[in-house]
Image 1 (cartoon, rainbow, N blue to C red):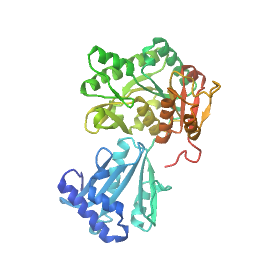
Image 2: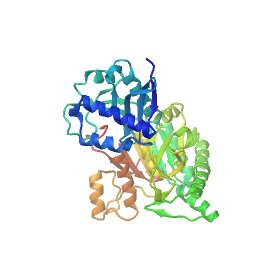
Image 3: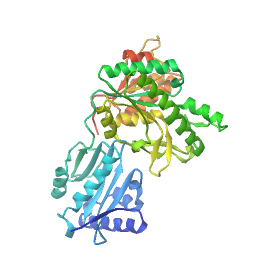
Image 4: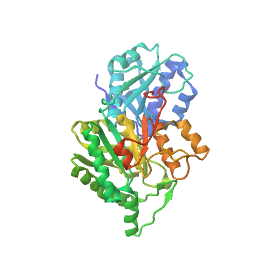
Length: 416
């Protein structure tokens, strides 16, 4: 039997997808729930691009099976709605659909594909196990009894010593800072670490926009980016800031390679909101590419310009890029290099370790105040996104290994 897998895009295809799912619910009426009813009503709903996809398998032009995926986190994809009409089962259709979605998830840099299915659906469970899925803890809350949760790890083995280091664009305007920073990275390399550098360039961009007589406007710390501002950001961040940093690193003997999230579709993004214009948020990272560069001894230096599912280029907050990359490669540490040594107590002493709960309490009672608040919030956001350990430090702390480290409780590290 020859089948064709197509992506569902037209109203007619959506109606065919819905009709097949209704056949499934007639076969298994106990599976119907409010969530499934909402899915049917909202199609494509949570399966809409860029955070999902819907597919039909066709035999002689007729739809015979469905599958879909939806994104949970920057690292995690859930496969959903895999259904094959009874007369076409055990002929490789479900396997082809599952492999199609797995290939998409792997190409986009997701770390894991997960699925929930009925524990008594022996054929389905056996198929997923043959594809490499193993039983995992529940990855979402559910009150539906009789489900089994399975996951397939797509991540390459975490590169030994991988660390993500984010450096702000303001610091990159200082040649002395850049030289010292490059020296610290070189020493890290010699000690066996594998740094991945993400950088900003906001100050250089603001200066370029002033030369262009273009206004600069921020909303909640993010730059409003029209097409002209976006193009200027591409020049300032992917061009001048990136290549100056690469040159400094190469001067210190580091085999640095200058990139942006745009190159090879390294970081895919979605538009954050219409008010900000061409400002994106990361939705996937091609971790396998980064792992391959590290394996070759290269140090990626990544500017935050990235590609959207709509084909447009987007400006992305460098903190967000750094966090997404750290999650995707399962980095041992994400370090934010700032102008402060870390979080200080009321006596001015550095706090070497700080839990999220204690950090929130210190913000509430004023022990953390002023410009340190957004720095701590950024660290906590990175933890919430799945980064295992986050450090705030300055240039001296980067060289010495000092700073304030935030970490998830041990019970949450490695959880889905």
